[in-house]
Image (cartoon, rainbow, N blue to C red; front, side, top):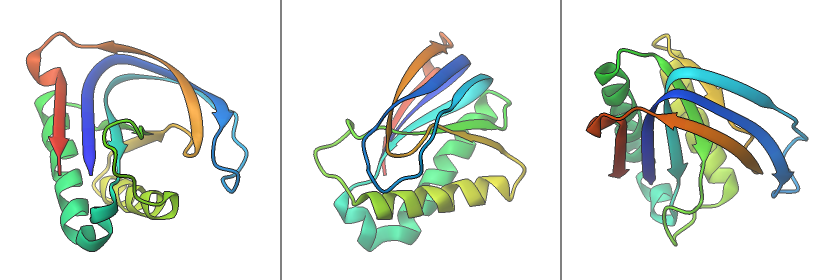
Length: 136
């Protein structure tokens, strides 16, 4: 799994075009402030390392949110971080587990529509730690 995280002053997103025929129809527009935005991509090898990948993803997200004193997270599927791609079904399942673990410790979670291209505007903070890439 690859994750690219940004601490944002503001993140706006809107569904644009469906790319997976089996996902529910969605038409979402949302603006989120003072959040850690997580661009993620699950890879084929993650299926054999589910427990480790899940634990490391949650740990890294919580680490960055603590650095910026926020418990607001936006999850965004971004299949441009690696040439290796897990199935959409596995990716959806894994990110659902990430969401569940964060919700269980009082995080507020927003998600862009999975299986869609999205428009977005992002205002990333200037600090060095506001931009973090992790290869899990």
